[in-house]
Image (cartoon, rainbow, N blue to C red; front, side, top):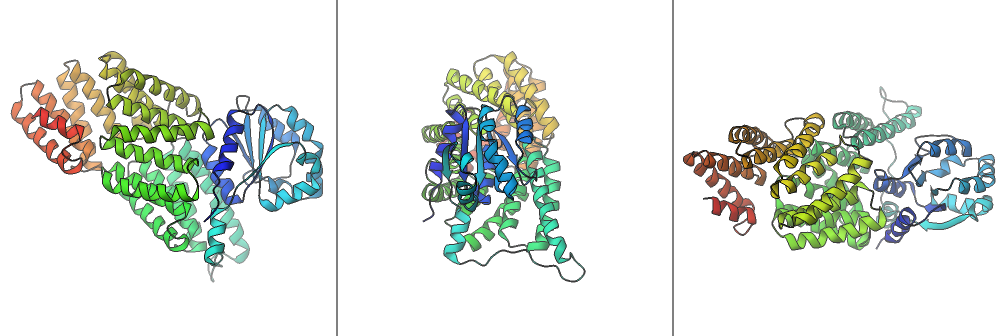
Length: 516
């Protein structure tokens, strides 16, 4: 069995949350360095990657970069071995050890194992200043060694294609495009991210073929973009393609395969296929607990998303328990001011809201919102979600004006970033309509319910729980206007879907029985 990296992540969490300043070394192969970057990239952590900024180590350049980020106290210096390719760069590192420490920040230098050995001998002055040395294990390398997989090398082009000397340059271009796509995705620029990933995939498929692990990885990234755009069918197809490659090459019990089960489960949950999603989340969770350990960020993500499926099924206690478990890990490893931690506050608040615990829900939604505004900015889909759901708590408490203002604020962001025909935008129309209905503004409510319904029928289909909710809510407006036959028809339509998808004992199904 591969070794767990949870101890390493616990140590990184301690540095992020507890350490005031110091120099640290994280020993990790490049694949694990990438995993670490993906986990921390959206938090209050500075990341300097020598793959993206090639050149020898220079303290003045590092100091100049650090001073541009006064609010950041922890910095990850990734692929640091690339900056230490000659004797002079190592000497400069030794000489600058006091100056690095004098910056009063936490610096975590990430290097592969061979460079750890070299630093211990050639950079002893620097090495002696390290507060801690953290070791991470490479799951992929271990899996390939155990299964004796063939080395995955770029395929040379035949006549008429790229020449051998161009291959390295083309691969470097693909990596650059993927990095840029990730930056665009973080800023919710989904169309730009999609174009960059498609271009990178075209290069990699030409170099590596279509059944390579790197193609599986880029398909996952592209599927994530499609999911964020509400293109669930395209996302599902790509997640399945990625899963087939990973199962074939890595086997079922590998963290990357577990990630594919997890991502596919997320798409199924978005389409209201909760039982299928639950099964896949559990399959992913078992692998992650076994290989990564319970306190790994990816395991925390499994607890978090499985909780979401339980919440959608009305299993609130099970959902609350898992959200709390995920939250404890995120706070410990990624810190309170990280989007993943904010998501845990946000979704735990949703469980409280579903149980009528409005004050607890409001407090957590506000906590999540502050983090999102600080880290992601006001015009980000996650921030919009916080405005949207805090508005829901206000509505439940009868604070209609506050709710209306926040729903409108959220809606403006979603229309701008996601477009009008996105499931999240449809949810906004639906819930803003609910506020209008509660204030007796039936025509405004009816118009928005119909607008939301058209999007949901088109994107999600008629037999989706969110579409059923729309039928139910539009029926309520008809009932309030005395249009009883129209109301009855829609209540029945909503009930049939809820009985089929959610089951008879779900709270939403019970509400449909009550309305009829």
